[in-house]
Length: 419
Length: 125
Ligand SMILES: Cc1cc2nc3c(=O)[nH]c(=O)nc-3n(C[C@H](O)[C@H](O)[C@H](O)COP(=O)(O)OP(=O)(O)OC[C@H]3O[C@@H](n4cnc5c(N)ncnc54)[C@H](O)[C@@H]3O)c2cc1C
Ligand code: SF4
Image 1 (cartoon, each protein chain N blue to C red):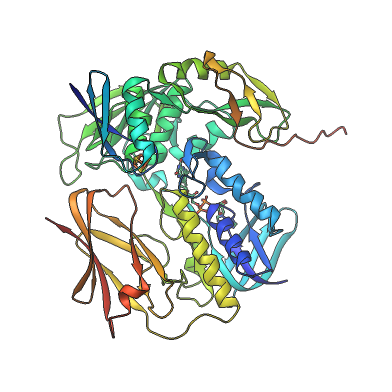
Image 2 (cartoon, rainbow over the protein chains, first blue to last red):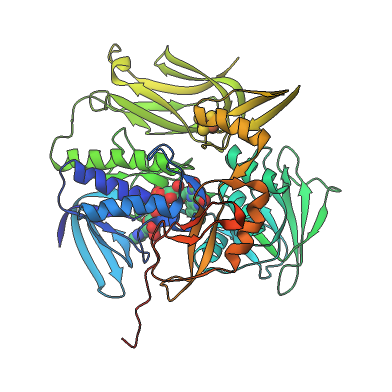
């Protein structure tokens, strides 16, 4: 089978990318999803707060997903469910597997990678002590409670203040559990402030920053965990240990892009995001292969996932129609002084759209600082921000007319400047 | 005069609002949009939240359906709302916006479904 465009992953990223490719005139599209339904991780995010930017109303995760699924149906875009992509070759031959059709291949002219992310495995967390039952990653707990309708524990401690952990703290309280505390090893929260307010503060759940789990007790099931304060180098401080009785420990320790397929393909990867390096068109170093959504870098706002993915769909359609501008050079975007990475990581002025969004994250909390953009040595932007935190993705907008006056640009730099 | 610092939860930007309460007058500063201004006033007079949860489904392809209150309800009614939902069972199929429970906890607000749950195919025809 030959397809013009294959989108791997039917989460919000894949759906928005496929729709935008169709809007831009691509007829022959196939979305491949390994789950039993489209919508990706949104199906388990039953809380509200999605879509304020995209739909100007506050939706829950499943409602947001359904808006896009409806559009996929209205536009007659093909998709397969219960089908996993196991391999992609450099000449874009995709290997798929499903219980119904077994193993088969599809040859694509262009591919959009939208596989999302998964939770950091617990083994990587290095918590000493036994491994009794009752330890879940927050995302697994979210699925068990919200989709399978199971209650997983009565007395809960949460390690990690990422959004999923915060959301689950509230969810468990409402389900009748006693959530003792959320411990966060860093001196700042990994989640959005609004989630701390409406998930922890509303229910009087304490958030202990610079604290971590140092021991887990219990033979068959968790009986208690020991929490200690950490010093600047994140080492537990002896004498600060405190033991909390609980039957459940949730780990909310971050997400990593799901990039096994990209590695096999020889796509060059960014060490910071663990997603692909992409140019302003969201194209990877392998021609005709694009990436968007959480597989590229972890987003906290699905609206931005949809927006980014729309661009990937547009770029793929230009590529397929042979309209991709090959002129100009890829200018490196350098990130320093607190800016950890940027997406995209290169920018071609003759190819860029009128407005190009550069997304990035900072490495620590800044108050009243500036986000500055330099074209070589000239500062072209100096934007005051009341607060910048690692938990929230930031963005700057570059317009093509701001860059046109410059000739022979060597690099664009994004940095944080403090007053 | 009382001054309160509140984080707006209207959207993920989370503007830091300063609400000043003076006799009959409440002034909000620090908001970026109208939602924040209204939220600031409401939060110091009668705080409300949208509540989301799940409800059991009979004969569905999944065991539970996600639900939400159609609009926000007073904060002190949240647990009562959740309790009423625990006793609730619906029959598949369920569509988005189906009313699951009317006038939850006496708030005059309905609880509606936020997800489509199809009916399990009956193996016996
Ligand atoms: C456990 C978890 C919980 C989250 N909870 C929240 C939350 O509460 N609130 C919030 O704002 N954000 C949450 N997020 C962030 C959320 O992931 C993003 O907002 C958004 O859903 C990302 O969209 P996406 O399409 O990039 O990824 P996803 O939604 O993850 O979609 C990726 C899709 O690709 C499919 N896929 C992956 N690999 C393959 C393959 N090889 N073959 C076929 N299909 C494949 C997956 O099954 C999945 O459906 C959560 C993330 C995770 C991992
Ligand atoms: S004031 Fe407006 S922009 Fe600011 S957090 Fe509230 S809703 Fe968002």
